[in-house]
Length: 60
Image 1 (cartoon, rainbow, N blue to C red):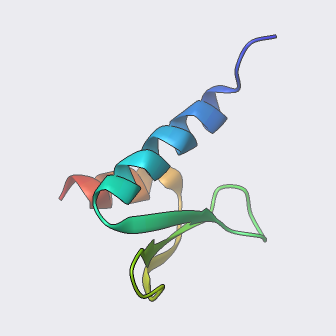
Image 2: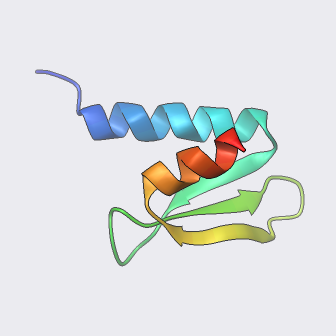
């Protein structure tokens, strides 16, 4: 069985976010909504973003 490309992509972005001090969480309402939280204090940094927007934000 082939790996789900979206799952692989989200794992890659989550690992990248973690290296930068964030925690990536998928939203409960929509599978394409994500939030970034500060890994230390748990405060939201960016919320309700598509994964592509999270990637762009991490690239800044």
